[in-house]
Image (cartoon, rainbow, N blue to C red; front, side, top):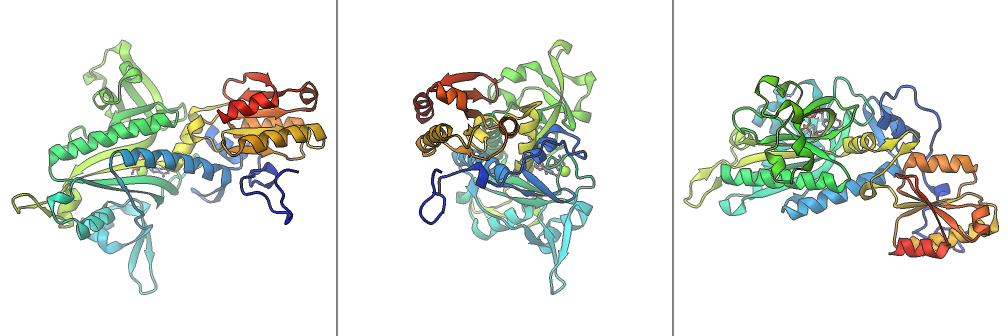
Length: 435
Ligand code: ATP
Ligand code: MG
C-alpha cells in the first residue's frame, strides 16, 4: 500500500479516505428541513452539540479554509488589515456605546470569578473602535480598515436550518475609519465591489439588495443575497442586475421583503424578478455613531478634533457553506464549485483487493497529489457505496479505477457537475491533472 514508511506512518501528503474523519450516511436525518442541512449531516461535515452549536469536521474545515483564503486575498487588495479581536469582551466597552442594555437576549452575558460583566462577541464595533483609538491619533492614519474572521455567538430565539441560522457561527467582520463622508463613501464602494468579487470567485451570483439604514447613510447599506428556494428573504430586483458590472451593481435596483413597495418601484413589471434569497453578507455605513459615543477622535490637517466616519462589513462564513450547497447540489449530493471544494479530485479505487487496480490507483495518486488536492478512496466497501459517497461529498472530479477498465488499459474521469465520463489512460489522466 502506498505511502507507508518503515514506522507505519503515512507520508504527510497522503490523504486516504480510510484515515480521513468523514463518516457518511445514507439515511436522511429526519429533523433536517432543508437540503444543505441534510447534505452536511449526511456527508459528515458537521456534528451538532447543542441547539445552533456545531462542531466542524474535516471536510467542512477544508471548505472553510478555502473560503477564508478567497476572502483574505480580496481584503488584501483593498488594503484591509487582518486581526483577531476577542470572543470575550468586557461589558464596559458596550456600556460606552450604550449597546450593553440595548442589545437584548441575543447577547450571551458572562460573569468572571470577580463578578465582572463580560459577554461573548455577537459583533465587534466597540472593540474595533477601542483598538483604533489606542493607536490612531491623526488624519495620517486614515483611512484604515481592520477585519477578522472569528467565531460569534448570538443567542438566536430560533436557531434553525443547521448552520444557516446557528447560535455560534463564523463571520468575517470588518470595520473602517475615514476622515470624512466622501472618503467613507469611497471605502464603502471599494468594499462593496470587493464583496461582489469575493462571492463570484466562490462560484456564486451575489444579489446586493439595498438595506436602507435610515437617515445617516442614505443608500449606504446593502445585504448580499444568494438565490435559493429555501432562502428566508424574498428579493425583488431588476433583471439587468444579472448582467451588470461590479460598479453598476451599486445602483441597480434590488430590495428585499418589506422594503419592496410596488407603488414606487423604478422597474417595469417585465423587468422585475422575484426570488428567494439567503443573506450571506452585509455592508453598512453608520457615520460617527460609535466614534462619537466612545469619544474617539483624530486631529485633522488643521489640528481640529474629528470623529472618524465608520462602516462595518460582514460575511457569514459558516452560513455561506450552507448557502453554496443550497445553490449547488442535485438529488445525489453536493456539487462543490472548484474554488471552494474540499478536494479538487477523488480517486475511487473500486476494487481494493485487485492488484492491478491498486497499482494504477496508487500511481495516479502518487503522480498528481503533489500538484492537486486529492482524496484517495481506498476503503474496502462496495462499488455502489463508493460511487454514492463520491456523489454525496461532491468533489468536482472523480477518477474511477475499476477492474474491467484497468484490464483495457483505461480509467474513467467523471465530472461531478455534468456527469460526463471520459475514458482515459492513466498517463493521460496524470497529464490532465498536472497541467
Ligand atoms: P440575519 O438578518 O440573518 O439575522 P443579521 O442582519 O443579524 O442577519 P449581520 O449582523 O449583518 O447579520 O451579520 C453579518 C452576516 O453574518 C450576515 O449577513 C449573515 O450572513 C451572518 N449571520 C448573521 N446571523 C447569523 C446566524 N445566526 N447564523 C449564521 N450566520 C449568521
Ligand atoms: Mg440577526
